Amino acid sequence: MALKLITDAELKDKRVIARFDFNVPLDKNDKSIIADTSRIDLALPTIKHLLEQGVSKLVMMSHLGRPNGKINPDYSLEPVANYLAEKLGEDVILTESAVDNGIKELLTLRETKIILLQNLRYHPEEEANDEDFARELSVYGDLYVNDAFGAAHRKHASVFAINKFFNGQAYAGLLLNKEIQALDKILKTPTKPFVAVVGGAKVSDKIKTIEKLIVSVDHLIIGGAMAYPFLKAKGVAIGNSLCSDEDVKLANSILRADRGNKLVLPIDHMVATEFGGKPSVSDSQKIDDDKMGLDIGPKTIAKYSETLKTAKTVLWNGPMGVFENPDYAKGTMALCEIIAGLEGAFTLVGGGDSVNAVNQSGYSDKFSHVSTGGGASLEYIEKGELPGVRVLKYGV
Image 1 (cartoon, rainbow, N blue to C red):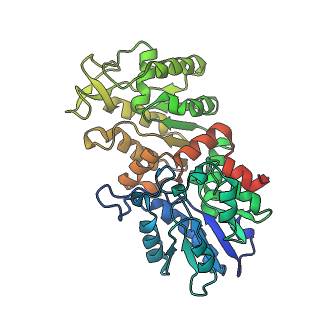
Image 2 (tube, helix red, strand yellow; image 1 turned 135 degrees about the vertical axis):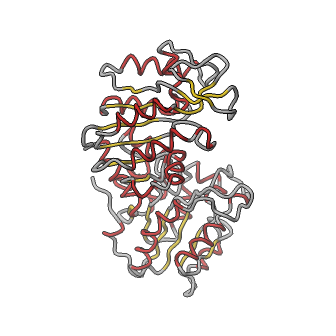
């Protein structure tokens, strides 16, 4: 069953309540400054479409951070409201709470058009998928729109339970639909050769994704700290590199299942005697006892480049090293450049750290799709569906 899109909805003079993913990083030293506005910028086409189609009121809602069901000024959506007002050239009224009597009154004021509800996660009912809380939210709109792909894997009140109160009047936003279409290209109709690049810290975090991908890809490149359990499982010394016994066990099971020799592992490393210490190259796959791996080495970059150069579909999730430190960013940045330069390939990057790296590299516009949802995209790859998307199609 296809998603019903906002482009199919009769929007004129309707009140719309819309769920977005405005969970943006704030500046560590000044919480009033948004460090990366990408998630808001990518939602703007949906917001502008709703306004251009003549909605009478647009009530927007989102979470920000993890305030754990309590009011915490560090997680206020005020910076988001200010940024939206600037981008839209219109007033955006931020409410004191996601549910209070004042909101209904605001909706009766002719001059008030755009409202942003304060952080949904100030209310424990949001993450509990509480039906009464969802009902309270639902009274603010005639139609419901979900454009929060980054939260679509959560069974939360504003994503899941709220659909119960919009029978036939729940729609997907433009960004959510774009994300699903991009992932479907990778899951359902990948043009071969299909190469997946998986990095990050722990095998256990991405085991289900790897198990799913190993069946459909031609090559599966492993990088970051995730590579060390695979090397250890193969009997290669990894020194003091980050590695748990559980991850070695999981890596072993994947190696046994890899009958087509699809896994591609590092053949050299950037190492140091301590985390973030002075870098040196470990010229072989083996890492000395007093060293730890913190990035892939130059030979590995060349090997991964060779593997990728004929790819027609590429999925990338997770960095190749501790890229926040310039000494250990070469592997991740090299991959940005290699994948961005692939001609005629469909390239998708997902996951917070790899998306940050691509944005830093200046190559983001060279990727076919940069996903806004790390956890959501991994779950969609694993299961082929998300609770927040399924409920839009079939109801609660």
